[in-house]
Amino acid sequence: MKRMIARSIAFFLASGSAALQHQNGIMIRTTGVSIRRLGCGTTLMVGRVTPSRHKISTTSMNALKSSHNMNDDRRREFRSHNCYHDSNRSVHQRIESRLHSTTSEDTLTSKPPTKPQKAKFVQINEEQIQLPDGRIVNIRRKKPKRKKKPRSDKRHEFIGLAKAVDRGQFTTVYQPAKDGDGKFLAKSGLPDRSKPFTVLGIESSCDDTGAAIVRSDGIILGESLASQNHIHEEWGGVVPGLARTAHEEKIDVVIDEALAQAGMSMDEVDAVGVTVGPGLEICLRVGCERAKELAIQYEKPFVAIHHLEAHILMARLPPPLVDEDHGESRTAVYPSSDGVHESRRAIEFPFLALLVSGGHCQILKCQGIGQYTILGGTIDDSLGEAFDKTARLLSLPVGGGGGPAVEKLALEGDPKAISLTVPMQNRKDCDFSFSGLKTNIRRATVQLKEELGLSEEEELSREDKADIAASFQNVAIKHIEQRLNRVMTYLETEELENNDTTNHPKIRSLAVVGGVAANTELRTRLQTLCGKRSDPWTMHVPPPRLCTDQGSMSAWAAIERIMVGSSDLPHHQEVHARFPFAEQ
Image (cartoon, rainbow, N blue to C red):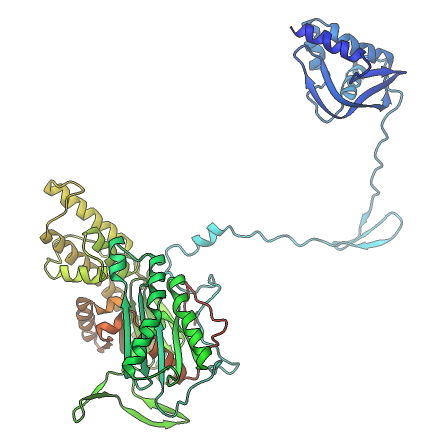
């Protein structure tokens, strides 16, 4: 079969349309061709023929033509010595090279021109060279390129460190605008601060739509809250898309209800404050856009609220006093000084804050509005998240939140029934970790089922669930106590070393804020911790209903910002899912 193919190709070569011919001692070769090597040793080149620039001898051409008549042994030897596998040379160059090396009488009649050698130069110094013609030329050296660190390496830098802490990795951080002298800027103006003023606060950072009218002396004139517990309960957690839809349906309703309770209209409100982060971005945007529309439409000062700062500042909200003669709530308002009226606060700067919520767990040194130093934070899960996941593990109803469900069940259990390890015993810092505790709870649950002979699908008894819930809560709070105790000792030691109460005032006040601060067991044990110190601390906790997300926290935070002369422009205000405090 191979020989029949060879004869057909030979006929094709002789027909005048040959891919390779010899005319007057000139090698004819194709251009723009595809080369196919057949099993019989014949090379077929199909394409347009053009004359080669090099001539070869008659002996070379005869050798090429006779290659089709070789026996198998001679053909293999011929192919192995003719560099057919060298793809950098044309076919006739490969053959000529072989013939030139073996036949002394066969020589090329013309050789390709050799490349001219580069002119030599003399190196004068590191920056100059001298060319052969005597000219001196400056060397332009390229700067070595800096190797960029892979993103994975950058992430590795923060492994084992507290989350939501600004170490230069965030593009956007929270810092109220100030001028060159460090004075706050009122970008959208300020209301008349010589007398009490009112603020509309809007909150939509997660799954609660809230609005409230709060007066600058701390009185909540009207508030409304639309909970979404019934929406997310069947899913076991917050579904962002459903939360956004619920916000859009309720945002105007809660604003109107808050205004109606306060007996006011938007014309009578003095300013607008709204949460812009951190939180679920698509939820934050619902409240932010509505607040921007109202501020622009009614020409009111606008304040963009940081959600965590709002939680912290709720500890400063003055508790109302009851007027026995009229049965009304009131606060102490003092005459204005420098055009700003003054009212008492529950806690003064500086103070220490423990922020425990569904998304955050931090210990902060609070020195003023927008001035927070994070002394410790969670490296994985928050305390609220750990409560929620434990509630789901125990198949508890989480419509009202996993924390309240676990706390309620823990009252029926033994906190020492399940042996659990307190997290991070070997780390002598102030950070938290709850992921390992969640894993221990899961393992303890599985082990208890195996001991009782239950399958994975079968549920534990309520008594067993209560023991697990109580044991989890006990160890989780013990972890908080240890970290908080360490921070208190650190601050007290630092004060003794500085011995300067003027520039570094003593901190002996603790504010416990955030959604988990509503936990009664946590409040009780932290109060005991503060009282047992050699120099006792004072603990401040907002009322339980004001620990969770609601419109009053946004309104009060806006009041605190306005009192120091700070406001923002509404027109181009954005929301931020991640919004850490600026590094102090």
